[in-house]
Image (cartoon, rainbow, N blue to C red; front, side):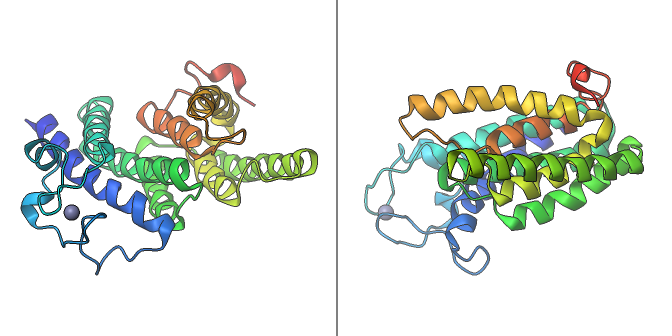
Length: 251
Ligand SMILES: [Zn+2]
């Protein structure tokens, strides 16, 4: 019953995530501007905006102009719903942690998608992620000194990589958004989990980079999706990087 509620909330929040990940990096207002068909500009009604169902019922077309509606929207809704259910399962009955992790998953979906499509990590989502991580650390009983040390070292590693990449390749490999993200992620995984987290992100980056190149999108790929996937895994499994699967990389 509760799992179904998380799935439903995930569908709705996934719809919001699809919208935010499109609008935030492009500087389109997110509150006052109603959703419109990108092809004909018609303001969409509630019946056009039901997660997944509207897309299926209208056969992936706009009701007004017949223009194609990208499968991106239902896919983001389904993925977010699955992540919310996963957050609920991983919390094993601890409702506050399930809610906190779900909100974190929402922010990470927006960040990963925005970075993948526009190479911009929206500051607004980092500002949402920070209190989520603080609340999460509070709930799982993390050591704050470990968290702060993790944040500092993560920024140093991110800043160092950014500098090195610019120096050797002459272009930005790691954006400033990635460094800010690492500060928040470092606070979550702590100094004890930072090594494992970076190893996990590196592995995820190899996978995402291969997809990026297979899609013919160039040599330098955005690192936000890999950073997000790693942090999501860490939020779902609090011991993953400090004493779990990736503990080999611990400092
Ligand atoms: Zn239309």
